[in-house]
Image 1 (cartoon, helix red, strand yellow):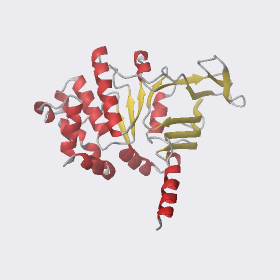
Image 2 (cartoon, rainbow, N blue to C red):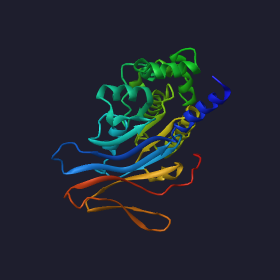
Image 3 (spheres, helix red, strand yellow):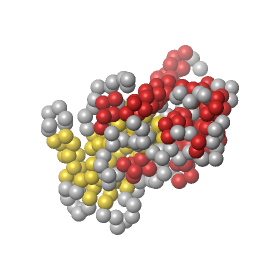
Image 4 (spheres, rainbow, N blue to C red):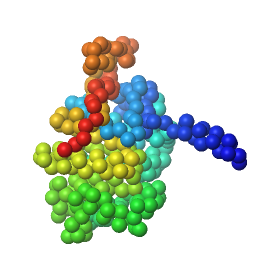
Length: 287
């Protein structure tokens, strides 16, 4: 192949790599055909490498949104593209494998396996994903070594802790194990569901320092769900989930207070649950 042809191919591939890790369009989901509420997103995206803060009151659809984002459930219509792949068009088994390969999840209750050791919990994703195992082995000689490397970066490098059953660890230690498990194999997207809810202010700040650093090193995008508004300004952008029962949903420009209609639902007497983007804050360091 000629040098010119190589350049053309490289340019073509570069042009097809989106800046967005998440791209959603005309998405609709309802738990049943007769449900009073439906979750809708007309248009929404998250850039690669972005740290996104997601908030919303109880009942606003956070759990539904995270379940859609992680491929646990599928929408009835529209597109939900992650890393260029449309999860809406996938079967349940393909979504499961996609999640194992490309998404790391930090659960609110951590969901660690209590009878497994710290290291055994961290390496679990590599047993379900060849993609993440291969990525882990690029950094370390074994997946266990990579687990130790991540744990050391998260201040969990004490040899006494590495082989302890996780149910013998403190809450803060379990949280860092959960973060290491989500980060191993450098998944493109990290989803954190209220991971700091059980921590005091100092430990919360310390954990975010470590999480941001590891996401940056891995090149992972972070979607972080929390009720703690003190954390909002530490992120690149804040998005609010809002439940609307009116016939119009509006997006408010925080700079001018101008309101723009983004969706109408006058034909249906339903509560519509929709994402409404709020102000983009200037990215700040933590600590």
